[in-house]
Image 1: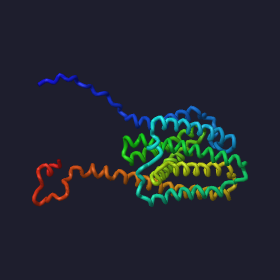
Image 2: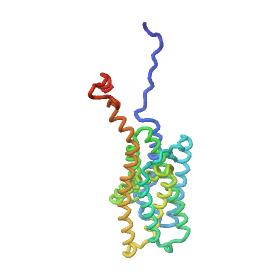
Image 3: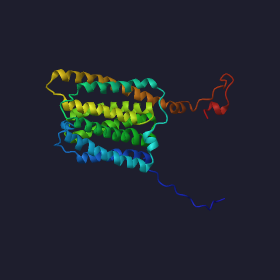
Image 4: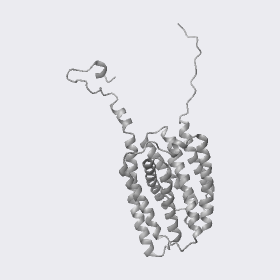
Length: 295
């Protein structure tokens, strides 16, 4: 009997899910705007070294970026997924990495020459790095994670978010940074991204990653702005702290990867054992044909 019902045509599907595109869009837009604003003649080394630089390079642009990103997240209704992780990792020992990062950040504070710049510089720098922390964490450990999780397993989400966070720092070359130093910074940032991902998974929200990010940037910028590069006595402890931070960030890479890998274990087990006969079938007496065929 021939059916007279009209044949419904399937709408063509996007090769990439819209959620993934929406998750990547703010990151691509930020990279494009940063590239457009940068100039090869810019002196990247002087970023955040003066009150004027902090205001015009950190406070003003980052506050605008935070506002625009918040409007975007609100329009999508992504706040529950972007700001909150309902499944906190049970691997609580990994919190050692987060604690050690906080210790490294705190160890930088005595190295800052607090008398070298006015008080308003440090107040504005605190405000500026907080804006940076909110924007970059909501961008890469918030919106991006929501988009990636609609398509990738958690281990892939961890890798992609860390790599993309690191690659964002390649834009510093356009602002006058040296290529070699920038490549080192890319690897450093990707490793730091793993620790920030870990902080989100441990606490279940973005607050701790934001504060850690801001704390790290504050010490890094304040030390470079106030420490005399000709004073070897002050540079030595700065170098020691830097070496220790490499080891801590390496631990963060391992811990973040383990957390993401553990999340995917049920999925891997389903894939690996989906054709295995259920327990209780006596192999000596023989299983039913359907079970033996792995159906």
